[in-house]
Amino acid sequence: MLHCRQHLISWLLKNVTDRVLQNALESGGVENLGWFDPLPTSDAAGFLIRLTSVHSTTYIIAVAAGVCGKYRWFRVKEFSWGDWGSDVPDELYQGDNAKVYGVLKWGEKNYGGENSTDASGGEKEKTTGLAG
Image (cartoon, rainbow, N blue to C red):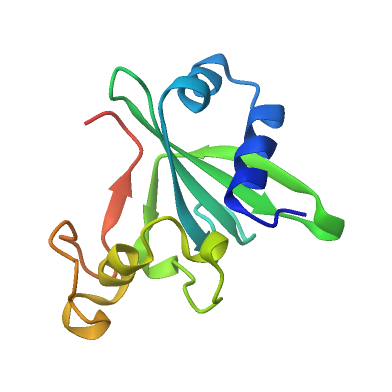
């Protein structure tokens, strides 16, 4: 069972088999985007992680929660902030920047607007995991 951000990253380091993603995990930036229900291209709920390589290439990895504490991972090309599940009062589930993600889900006026200068999207904005 994943209890904190470090458990999530440790699980990824053990289970991600793609060498490019492993390199990004080990030497790039890792951002927990939080809990999404459902995950893109899946009926399962789980976490989305944004990896940024040392060459600034961005990848999105989904970690889907299964039965009995089993998880699986897959790459995601795009996702909707409308599926971000912020109602769990836990940092792991809310992600690394909950205030910004809340603005991306509900819009600035509906989520306080404070510290949201980096947020530019609305409820159904699509975000890509492609280089950009």
